[in-house]
Image 1 (tube, helix red, strand yellow):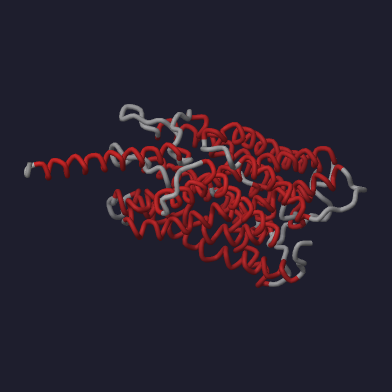
Image 2 (tube, rainbow, N blue to C red):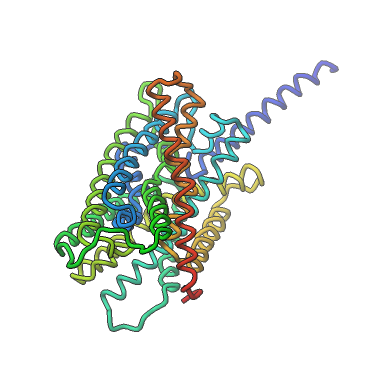
Length: 449
């Protein structure tokens, strides 16, 4: 009789371990990032296009007007090269530990910097980026709907921007209940096609319009301070345009992987296609838009193009569809984080009801902030430098140095340090310009107008 204790204990421990792993597996199968792993390489292509080619592309001609020809082209090309390199690093690091996948940005951060520190470094920045993008997209969606309404029906009664943001948000109260990345692939594909469409409309309609009379390429601002701050703000706009890194590991997590066929192959193929599309969207819009309108260009190129009416109305509708997809792509990792905390830390049951409440509250929150502070340009510059520069330009490089420890003064070592220095400059300078822009806009702004 007396010998039974230890075996009972062992079987009890085994059962509890089994229960724990079964519970963890059930949670993994329920969470949005890890629940479905059957994506194809082209999913990666259009998810990345949707994440990357944001409404930021429409502010690139304006950024060019504050940077000028030489610096503007240099910053655009350098950003394209650096962000492609850091994206490649993240794709490589997704499965660098055999048998383990870093499905989320912060898991990679924890591996590189340690359990606690990794969370503290990555999660706040990633949340600022994703929530920031969602708020900015609420504003963009609302503004594009308003522009569509005003273009199609110029004699109608004017409607407040607030209501258009609410109309835009109403779509997300429905769409945000799609469970995971693969379930939004249709929305994402439509969004990727739209981004190419409205980018093409923006530069083709500008080119058709021809160079404007009295066009000037000098700096807009008459004061030295205005020019410098404008330059800083434009750097943030460019950083915002390359923000796809915050969701890249989460996108890669949806691709199946075996030791013979790791996920980095199909993922990288998708990234290359996405980056070609990004170049086709960004460079023509930025260069043609600036060439045609000079420093008189608006912070959204579609506002500078007033005619033909039907085309501008169509382009604005394309922006709305695209931003709907983008919002979902950036919201998915946030849902994943909130739901993980609710289920793992606070021990809620993984139910539909929990998901319903969490996601509706989040959409309502982003809508409320968007309605309260719709300063589009300044917000881009501020968030762009503050959070996008680290997560896109240099955090992957720091992780690479920490994990792989390349040879000092070798090619890899230099490449990473150059990215880190440039990224740090961007992070420090652009929020200054963005904040000044917000302060200037706020002087003339009436709440909930």
